[in-house]
Image (cartoon, protein in one colour):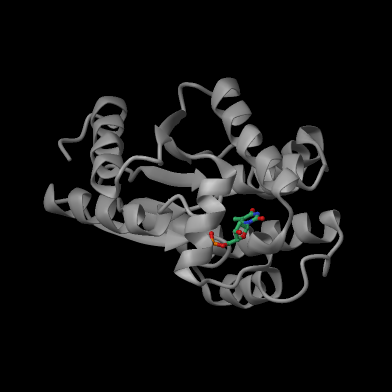
Length: 210
Ligand code: TMP
């Protein structure tokens, strides 16, 4: 059985990632592939419990290092229980956020820096990386306004604009560092155009007819 592929969708708040994960998973299924759609933080029983600690409550609830470790603890559970077994079965996995969110939010946004995030990544995740990462990019103010209109309550959405600007630049820096793995998608377009741009990137980079 051929090994599955691991695709991640990344970006700041309000870029429409969840909708696009759903649509991409559907398109891949229509080509006959078995697809697991999942998310971080979460995607496994224990990881979903850790998610509640991370997204609820006061913005200053954790110091950046505690927060980094909680995200990686959730990620380790998600990898062991969900992602790695699915890939072993030959499924494709489409994930709403993964470790680039830790780099952008905790590394750049909360100021821990890339070297700290990289070293914890190596310890917890090892050499494993996504086959393709789609970074949904839009101005921070636009994304926050959309997230606000959606009415979600996530403590990261309540962090200040300077934080959201830093993490947007962080995602763009990740794409510059790893252009073979990452494609930047303009998420300020209408959702259907974003879906088409994602499909084009998946076709050209992973040779699948979505
Ligand atoms: P979401 O479900 O809206 O993406 O919410 C999850 C929040 O967690 C989002 O605001 C980004 C944040 N986050 C981090 O700060 N670091 C991480 O590693 C991950 C996966 C998410």
